[in-house]
Image (cartoon, rainbow over all chains, first blue to last red; front, side, top):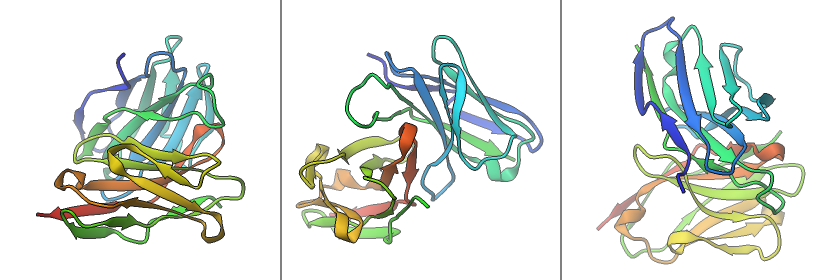
Length: 116
Length: 112
């Protein structure tokens, strides 16, 4: 059973460019969340997708957008890149059918984005 | 506001020594609490979680954590640290719709 996968592993962009990061959830999971982890910081919640719609959003500007596909995979898009967008971007998946009071998040290995 | 505080940025211990990593949370309702570990260049691995019931929870790799509601704490412990435990440790609280709020992390260094 494959876990959460993310691509690419590493990415280098220049300021002002646009980037797309991809995530495939764990088998059987239908909810995908994205987190940004700046160097030396804890992950910060960007947004969450469920049933192909953004269900919840953290404190991130509109330059950050996403999409979820019918197969539950997801993309994170960042426009007009800034130096401060350099970070590890983590994807997590979960399923509301997992049972219990809270649906455990399973994390992928992340995509390291460097903005020059 | 929901938040998690990990007061220790960096901890150094000798191999075989005991370990306690501190975590304090602020959350209005019954918290769902987690500890994750992150090795260099890796994603997050769940060590243990607390939802309800017994306030002492056991996790993987010999870790345990104790939930203390009166102190709003969820400290992580291990009786004997191994060199392979060197990593970054994150405490998190789970909000509704599965969103996680993380602390800033504690970097653990282990000396032989």
